[in-house]
Length: 247
Length: 238
Image 1 (cartoon, rainbow over the protein chains, first blue to last red):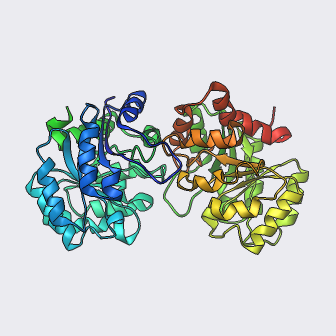
Image 2: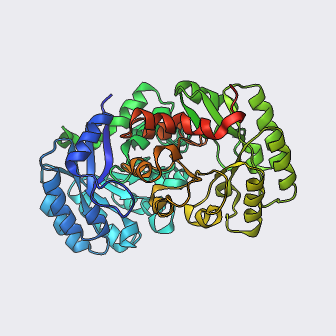
């Protein structure tokens, strides 16, 4: 089955792990049967978003398997909007990414609303990190989704270790989607999310190269999904949301 | 051969999730896991003596299960007697669950429980963070398998790997790219042990990490079964 991984990164991490280059990532993706990986820059998330976005454009350029997110910083909405315009028509960038934890800002802040509107106006999907702390709660995403009905928002991690909160939040607006990557591979997570939200709103994400992609693949393998549900989650929804740029 | 060193069965009150014995056995069959070291959730969530009896009874009638017993430092009363009795019966492996029981290993009662287990010659499986565990288990003379070390905190293990030959590490949370290989380089493959914590979480997720890691066949075999076979020794049925 074709697999499109909509949640990945390139960059260095402060943990005992390999620093995976773009070329090395492609080798691992092929080993695991993943056709496309949508990545944001670790440097853009952890440090300087403009430098990170610029470097990412160069890193992913030679690799058809890799596509990019434009990382936006909640503390720099105007400057982030400029980066949106720099890369919105770049053939390798397919969406935008916001990580509230490292910006130490809720995505429901004025900066978050500003950026969500800017992304919506440019017709890009928006990936937003969510987890269980107040700063990164999936509930913070709901006001953005309601204010921008035409904007497709993907909640990365579905709320993480409190994924049931992610499901509850996603029910609040039909334009909310989610990937289910996380340390926590709770056995009932995937099937509960599919039952509660519908397979049409869930996408495969692994958080590679922070985590190895086999971790999330295994969780999906263990989930009792119908063939149609599995097709949607593993690639169909990504193709619908991100469109022709994935090909 | 694959041994899953860290599984449980029973009922789970804090999530709506199927952790039944039947579910565990179906997962084992699906993933070709021949043996599971299993502990009754009754002993984790309610009463360790009741739970241990259930674990032993269930393992007696299911040849694919190896009983893993538990004690609870919060209760403390009866721990020493339970450990002595069960070790005398031939049981060797005890799993402690601070991650679900809301205690930390650096409390006086937990230290005493570790001492009781050491005196009994038990093999200890210990959840909770490495940062709290390492100082408490550093001088123990029995094998200790840390089951809850996320690779974010693998440095706490790497820093003491050389001076703690009795320290073993579960692969469960070594989910960073090549983190498992890094752990193998530091500890040696003979000190890494596959355990999934299924059916509470995905068995395939933990297993796929080991199966797709850059390891020699001997290293993979040691992690998937050899090391746990060695630790179980006579308590592993033939």
